[in-house]
Image 1 (cartoon, rainbow, N blue to C red):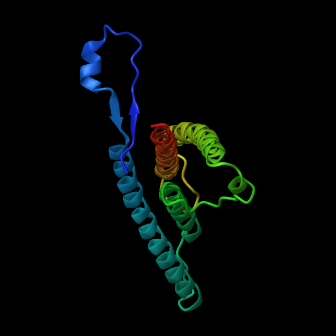
Image 2 (image 1 turned 180 degrees about the vertical axis):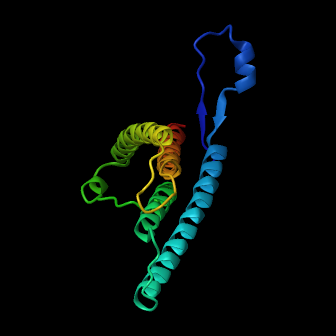
Image 3 (image 1 turned 30 degrees about the vertical axis):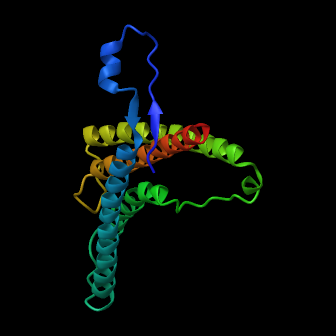
Length: 190
C-alpha cells in the first residue's frame, strides 16, 4: 500500500517550495521507519523482562537457600517494570494489540468507523503528548534533585526519561495511525 497526502500551499508564488515538496509527503516511509523503531524498542523490553526474571530468581534463591537476598531487588524490579511496559506500548499499538471494544462500532458504516478511529487516535495522541511532556519535566526535576531509592545507589531519572521516551514512541505510533487513516480516506476519494 502506498499512501500520499497532498500538501496544499496557500500561495501560488511559492513555486520553489512546491518544487521542493512536489506536492506530496511519502507516508509509507514514515510507516516503515516507525515500525522498525517500535520493533527495536520492544526488543529492549524483552531484555528487561529477562533481567527481571533473573533478578527475581537470584533473589529468591539467595533469600531461601543462602539467607542473603539481593539488596534493592524490589527497586530493581520496579525500574525494570518501567522499562518493560514503556518499551512495548508503541509496538503494541503498531501491531494493534491494545484492547479494542468494537461491538457497537462494527455495526457502523466504514466511513463512520474511520472517523471514530481518527477521533480515538487523536485524543490518545493528545493525552500521550501530555504524559510525555510531564514525564520529561519529572525526569529533569529528578535529575536536578538527585532522587534515588533508599536501598539502591541507582538514580531515578534515567527510568523516568525512559517512561517519557516510551510515551513518545506511542505518540509517533498514534500519529502514524492518524496518517494511515487520512491516507485510506484519501485513497477512497480517488
